[in-house]
Amino acid sequence: MSSNIFETARLTVRLGAIAANYRKFRELSGGAIVSGVVKADGYGCGAVQAARTLREAGCDTFFVARLSEGVALRPVVGGARIFVLDGVQSETIAAYVSHRLTPVLNSLAEIELWSAAAKKAPTAFDAAIHIDTGMNRLGLGAEDLSALAAGSKSHLANLNLVLLMSHLACADDAAAQMNRNQLARFRAALAMLPPAPASFASSGGVLLGKDYVFDMVRPGIGLYGGNPQGAGKPNKFAVVAQLTGTILQLRRVDSAGTVGYGATFRIGRKSVLASVALGYADGLMRAMSNKGAAAIAGHRAPIAGRVSMDLVTLDVTDIPAKLLKIGMPMEFFGDTIALEEAAATAGTANYEMLTSLGPRIRRYYVEGAR
Image (tube, rainbow, N blue to C red):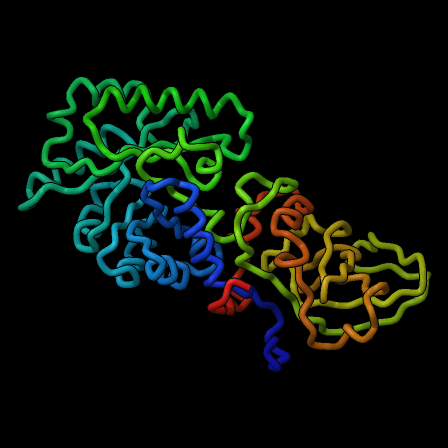
């Protein structure tokens, strides 16, 4: 922890763990291309730092959601491929071309738009096509897919088809029939279209087995240490992120008081309370009020009362006194409290826990894996 008392909260990001998790995906994927998904500011961990680390580990293909993310990523990853999931619109064509970004085309209209733009260029444009196999979000539905299959030569004129992809809805549940249904639909779609590299699996999909791997995988949450299969199941990936908040005040109280807004926590014994500089304005979920926890040196302390905008109170009565000092960091997820446990307590997913962390939390980068 920095000696600067004004550094009230920190997200420690272990770049070595990101690299280790990337290597783990390469091992699990059996020779398929392993891309790096760095959207949402690298899942809250820092897209620039994550992308540099992945590039050094051998990653040459990246995925982002927004065009702006792709533009910002280009100078960081040099000549690596960057796919943008949002697709293309007429007003974004120039930016795609000038920053050498590849749109993931989500409809027949987008395919035709990108093809028409390519017709005016000296060389064919790379293109990826997203096929909807059951999520009913972005991607070609059945009607667009049939039309593309019937006229692929004309629709894909001037385009270099570099990827056909889809997205699993239930990859966190290996027993879900939806996975097998989508796999069958994806295989059927591939059979209808000109041959091209295929991608189906994100982090959870890789863990479903080799049938879901195809030519490229697109890990996201697993790269950042999250468990793609959720809380309660073994996590194959190294912890990347540790969220800590600083103790601002320690207070001894008797057994007659309450804690926080709404007086929702009643003190039932002589206690020691710690006020910690972390709140819902920083992304610590208000839903963790009265049921979450933090830890110091492996010892847990429950959240007492409501999480407020800037502060959270912990009941540290059972923490050894020698560990409790003003300025000491309390971990809300990381090594003692798994990201998935914290997310489950908040009634949300590990994805949201990471990507909700606000700018007041300093990102602190370390090279090692632990």
